[in-house]
Image (cartoon, rainbow, N blue to C red):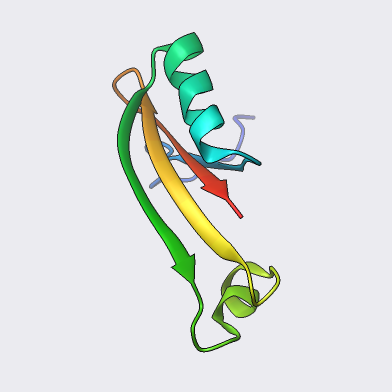
Length: 82
């Protein structure tokens, strides 16, 4: 009997990792895996007070900066620093 499949699953858009030092993580992926930095964004700060906790279950005072890198043609990695 064949394993069940998801009929609409075609590919993974990206994976995400939380890292302690965003610049060091980007350098690591670029230097060791030949990744390409696609973009960075942030820092994001929740001025209203509760959005970070509601959306991401982190401390409401958290600040977040992100970087998207690409390894090869299709593998995207999103890096978060809180």
